[in-house]
Length: 163
Image (tube, rainbow, N blue to C red; front, side, top):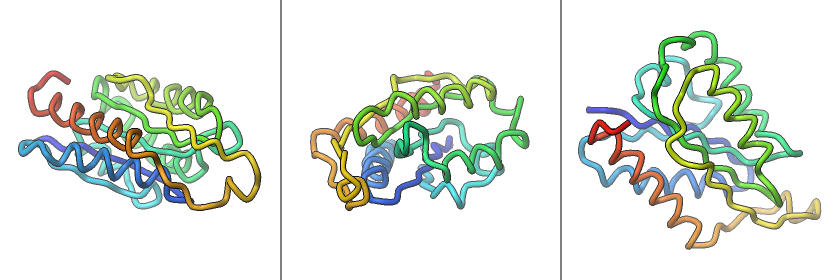
């Protein structure tokens, strides 16, 4: 059985909802085990044990969240040259843009030689004031369906050996 590892960081709930939707979509595939881990709990051993990945992060100040960066800082060298060619996808919850976080994440996993199997799924919540940025996030059901579909596609591809 293959494993899909979903690593998530979320402070206001938006990214968590996206990651959980992807996990629900992936869990419909009986031949794939889905592991949803908070970035601060994920370890190099978790990365090595997985056959594919979904990285879910908010964009903070035009960058991926610090806790997600910390995950990569802690796991990067211990798994280097051991995960080459494995598939990944990215979920980004952004106030207005999201492309910088997606670009930063892509640059990091390029060093791992991971293979992107989908364009980054960026959900913009239009949070522009300090109050809106810090408020709990509700993700539109249509966007959660896109996350669900991405999870299902990742798990299906892993199970079929496409990825």
